[in-house]
Amino acid sequence: MEGFIYFISITYAIVGAISIIGFWPQIKALLVSKTRSFSVSIKTWALWTFEAFIGLLYGMFILQDLLFLAIIAFDVLGSAVILGLTIYNRYFRFNNKTQPVIRYQREYYILKKDNINVAISASLQKIPLKQKD
Image 1 (tube, rainbow, N blue to C red):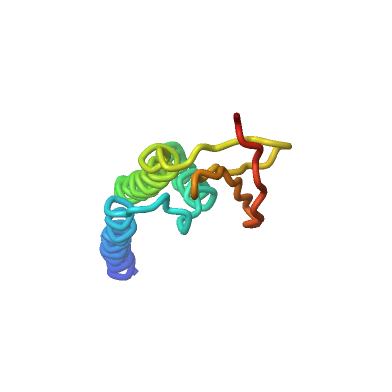
Image 2 (image 1 turned 30 degrees about the vertical axis):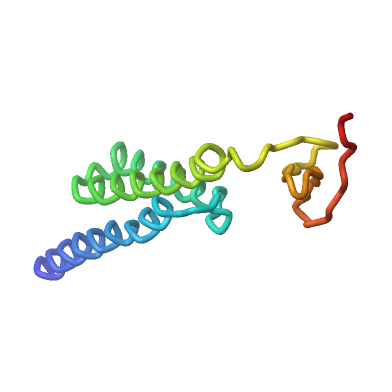
């Protein structure tokens, strides 16, 4: 039985290290992105970051297992970096091309096209705005 427990411990460490490496392709894609990264879900990554953080707290106060803490800490870090890069790309890095406008508690983005302001809603309906004289 002792050999089996050792095998599970080593396997957990290897699989944990591989999963940590798995964050890199998404991080790299966000770093070289030329868009606002709408294909990456902020809600999903926020949930995964929160879940990993709760796992880290569980490991610290309940399990007190150093191997588990090391792996889950990197999970928290990887998830938080992806979440942060997605928020950065969407609201700061590429925000100079559009301005968010809140009307009737719906979000619209104003785009300039042929000197005519057009608001495009999430449902992709085009709603002309009144021009300022």
